[in-house]
Image (cartoon, rainbow, N blue to C red; front, side):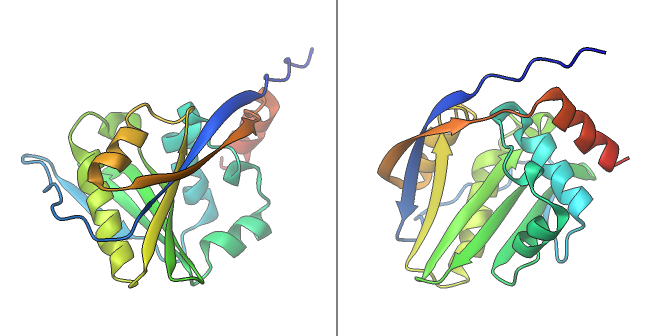
Amino acid sequence: MAKSPKPKSLKATVTHLEIKRFPHTLKPLPVNLHASLIKATNIPLHFYRYLQWQVGREWHWVNRLRMSDEYLSGIVHAKTTHIYVLGVDGAPGGFFELTEIGDATVELTYFGLMSHARARGLGEWMLGQALSTAWLMTPARVIVSTNTLDHPAALPLYQRIGFNPVSQNEAIIRPLADEEIMALLKSEA
């Protein structure tokens, strides 16, 4: 059996943003939706990887999927990491992850919706909930990064809610190869 070709590396422009005050107004939960956010304490790694894959596969979220169990556990189970899972109609619909950084900074490390939860008005509401949660940690600022491979609405959404760009850099993203995807799927079976 022939090996599938290695996927080509992708170039991306990464935009780093920050917000130093709590937004004046936040969107309410859209009406007629059954949605909830649940803090995932001691999240099982297979479920965390499922969230990463389901939310981020279109946008090439690969870093956490390539980590060993031990390394990933050290990150997601750290006292400074806070993961909240969005439930929509009783099923996972997305998640956000906050990381407390030592200089009075909270990073919105991951934020996204699964395809079935998009275009329902949940993104801006969930971002507001992420910021409300971050501000409970009394930071001086909240930071987030996005890149040109991310959902096209990501950067405008961050800016609309009050994040300001502070810097940019170029990055090379190496998509998952077919073998890596198959290994990931087999490990969770």
